[in-house]
Image (cartoon, rainbow, N blue to C red; front, side, top):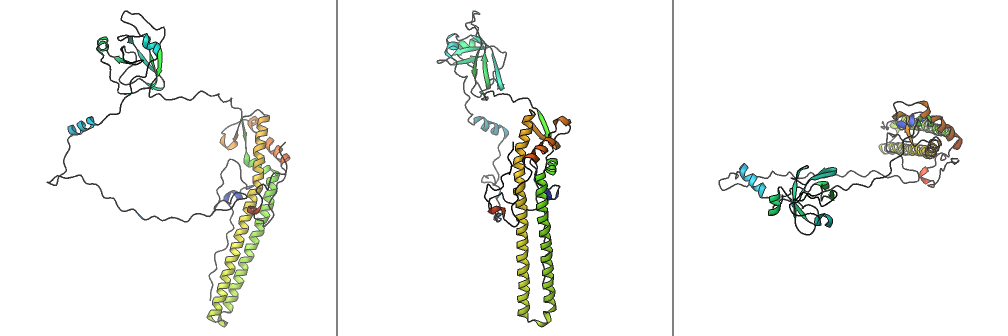
Length: 377
């Protein structure tokens, strides 16, 4: 009688963990084979169960209403245009109110020219720039524009079809006798103007530096120590997984050799015992694998936090205000590269880090556990 054993336990590590030194690099993205381990000191979240949705019923196409003869009532182009023309149009605001100084210094029939300025500026339609218009004085501080002096006298103003955007500039009005009653042009914000943000201070000139984070991690004495300890734990776990598989095979072979002397019930009991043993061992090995991976993240997180401070410190000491990854720069001179300086300072400030003890779940440690043993000076 044979018992189907599960496939060999896979203890593969994330792709990023296989590179030298195999640790998280600030500014890069890690691509794990499975879901990433939970953040230090937090509980792991389980993936939500998929939600199935019943398909919606098909929607039948609407059919046009038909007359008594069964045919749809056709609409000609002329009728369609007429219906569109009869639709209510949105109101167009008049010219914005004019300040009292301009209003009191002008009279109906005075000639002016218009211009629009500002971001995406446009005169109210259908007004045009460098065209003479004539003022029609209306209510208090309100004016209209006419196409001719006669239209202005008759009160026939141009109908505006657009509000315009930006700032409306009106030249100093010229009276009938040629007299200019204002010494300067007049500007007013249009209703559709875009509000511009106030100007801010310009950023300083960029003084750039570059560095290679992978090179820094490979040269870091703390990262090398983490690599050594975590690597030893992985090898130990792999040996334990191999011994577990060997035990499963021995139990299976014993069951096969005793099959002729066992009753059906006895054989089923031993088969279920083997299956339970395999499930328990696999669960324990996978839990050990998770603990090792999270311990590495906790240790490397200490290096990452200190490294950020070191990079800022070295950059400021050289007057740099912009530091880029070397891989992002196509060409640079050696004087821009601060990799070696960062490595020297990092090894001085953080020669070692705290690694969670073997077989201790990092999720059970205090949140402030793993503070760098040396402060940046």
